[in-house]
Image (cartoon, rainbow, N blue to C red; front, side, top):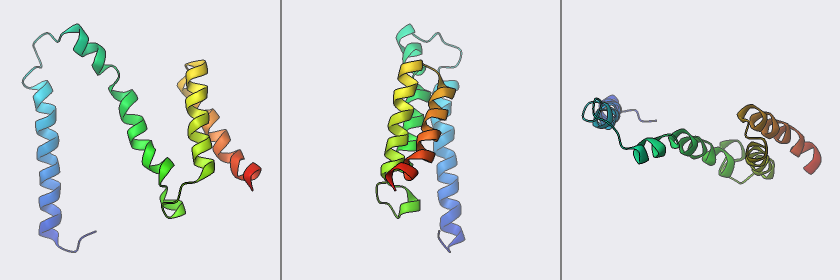
Amino acid sequence: MTDDPVKLWVVILGLGAGTFLLRYSFLGLIGNRPIPVWALRLLRYTPVAVLPALVAPSVLWPAATGGDTDPARLAAALATVVVGLAFRNTLLAIIGGGLVLFAAPLVLG
């Protein structure tokens, strides 16, 4: 965290402008034009790509352990992926990962 309010507002406004331009490039410039089928197919995978990118730092370098890798978190992430692939059900994958995250410290000690 910075103590300089000007620097903080410059960063906030810069991030806001970047977000606006990124969304405008899709919605404003291409919004009413037909999108090719291949692009629509690729856009369907965006949430699947974003979620692991958001979770990966918490699994590999968790702040709770000071940035050290935690075997329980790795086991929970692996269980989530395996259950998700096996059953193709998001809720089951989340529950499976949560159960492993809860049980792994008890088993590993």
